[in-house]
Image (cartoon, rainbow, N blue to C red; front, side, top):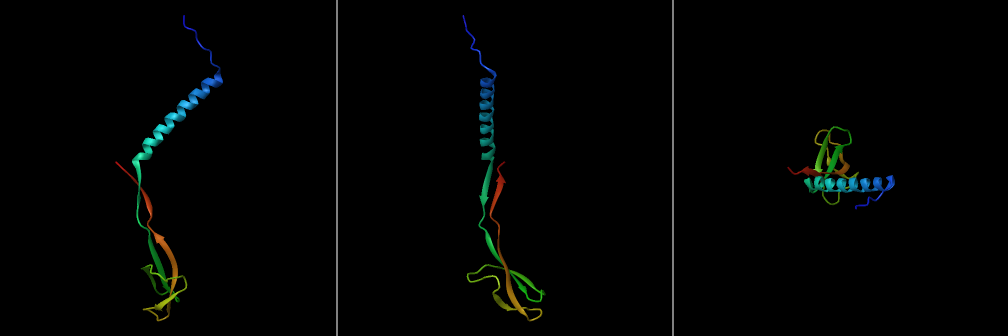
Length: 98
């Protein structure tokens, strides 16, 4: 004769919760493999502007640039050109593999 083991409700709930967490982990592993990260080298950009706000220019960063550096004269009005900002563009992007 087969004897049935009686389980209380808390044990049944813990078994169901464990099974659901296991299934969720397996599903998330498969969806994470479909997403791959493509790394691009970030580009450092220097923004240069005229003190009279007549002229703006963006250049690639060179060693020695800093914010406030005078880089020359404005081609429009002849006032000083100053490095206004240094920032990066590009970086890591997520790409979906089909």
